Length: 293
Length: 293
Image: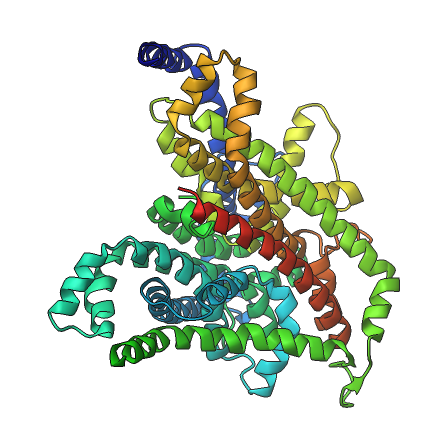
């Protein structure tokens, strides 16, 4: 039995080696490279369209070599029919940042509570919170619109901030639950012996230990707030409108201002790529709620 | 005894704020949506809402447009998620090969997952353009004639599917990749000892072991595809002739263009019921996953 296993292990290794030899390895490289190119190509299109002159944008056949110009970026930010993208950009940054801080603080507290305390109905509560992740914004938009209207908060930052906080809470709670659960209980018991209160242990001991988890959940929830479209479009008009609201205006431009909208699109998407790379280790875990690690 | 009280209080201090936010912005809107859905409730007229009983639901039942929207959504979900799962599964095996540098490619493929959906729609709208789009250019290079991708019924839906497949296949692939990485080697060794061929190993060993990952990704993607409306908003606005009018788009236009909130709320309630079923499914999967060693 043992002998058979070992022999098979050797065979196994040789099988793996042959997989990396020609031709399977080459085909593998080819497929992987083509797929990667496919994944990256639209980003290239967004950036180059934003850098093209208007003539080059509408050219047939498409122009591949051109002299890049920042005219579209300049127009979108400073000229463009009195509808500068700057205030949209600032609103996006403020709303994403504040809603993320709120979601992470409230979420981390709740996640820790779920991990370290036992109470009646805990499982139900946890799964109810999970279910809010699946809430389709479009199914909530009618009641939420009326609630926000009645509260007199249409076109206000605070409405979007609170809604995005709620939207990201389930994500934060479920990811951080996993991180807190990995802390050895002995560390916290030691702190308890040292006279820390329960809440002090949470804040001074547990939170610092899960910092990588907190950073990556914060990045994820900031991106989700940044990308959100429906609530922003229905609930804001100008004062608190975010980048997606600006981009939604494209349909009113009669399909002419490609350069300007691609420039704003590039500003909305390219910075996110850096962050995506930063959280790639936790991305699958985050998007599947720890179901896949 | 006093310690128990203290514990309970600490648990509530930690969990209550998050729960409060979700009660106000998740549970209450659901109840409110139910209430709105049994009223004639319009934003167009100043009259107060009038009780309507179940007539909004009855109208939905006979509404051709609603039936069409459900059907289009179904087509979209089946096509997009189906392609993403098949492609993702195949690619996971490619990226699971031990090839030098393939890890870098794998990390790069992640980038579409967190790109703002509205910008994804904008980029693909540009690429599918009939007059100067790149997809048409490639098609013409291959010897075809120009194709009106976004104004011909079936093609318009397929174009939206293509954009969704671009954004989500990498994520699906990464989930399967993570699942493949987690499969223990000894399973394959045992299979080889038993003399199973490569195909048999795939269908009788690998696929059954990937079942949880497949189901999890299926539910997550189905729910997300059901609620997404950014691509439709950017690329077709539901046209031509309702061929891409997915359920969220019909709901949104009913509520905020036709201003018929009662009718939109009835749709929202049905949608929530459907999502709840899917969510129960997911919770069950997650529990069995957590119970697994």
